[in-house]
Length: 379
Image (cartoon, rainbow, N blue to C red):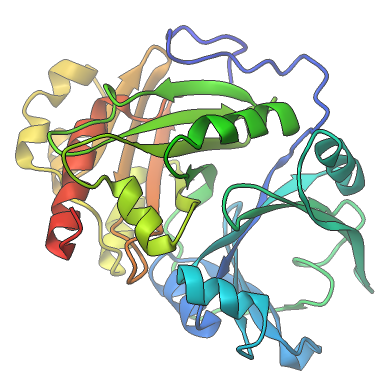
């Protein structure tokens, strides 16, 4: 990532200053789900992820079962409660299937916990160490928006597949990889007038800086609007856009999310690929459903974004969106919600120099979301 950005809306990330919370990247994202076995099958068959580890009654864990699926550097943990009388079951009853933990890979989990809690973070769990014959992993957790947490994961002394207590799965006949590489960013939705509070949290508590900002003039349609600010850590490996609703004629997608999720939470994960044409083609073949923009979107696309490598006919066929900034361009597409509640969805993104988040696509994208809201009767 360049040390400075040419585009006026892209703020430089200062990686040279003393970073009290150095992050190596996203370690894993944990979903609390009603049936982890079935959820794991969905992500393997549809998104092509590979089952690599498992923990449950067979490994001595009595209250839950967890399946770990991976593709590239994307790692999901799918966890389900085995009894109704625990916090996992309570989380699912309130929110439906959703993201509980956005875990961050660090070299020193104890230091990460100490640095953030002394700056005002609410501790969810003090540092603890897991151990087996493969080594040790130290972890610690703090709270962020809603019921979501960040767990710091220190795994430099561990040689196993995921965490101590998990058994490795060496063969997966279901997984059909599609070319996913890593998590580009994770978007959080918060309530009215809560965005700046969470921006302050990531700046003051975790040492992030504002990378980009959008107001309701940037993200609005005839009916609804929202505001968003993108926070990035010092080395730019972890980015968290934070959305809040804005006044509009009808209910925005953020309000719909907050209603059905029963509060703030992680709205979507952006998964990066080096070949979005192949990735999205495979995802479609494997049953993943995407939002669609009208054919008119492509009528002025070339004049807006200039020359790109991908054939226009392929973009139309796959319904891909394109946007350009001063650094290059990006291609992106968004799935429909992957839960029955209209909450969690995914973005597939390929960056060809572009560092922004598709501002030129906002109107077309949010009109597509509104069409879906209308079908659900929630606009």
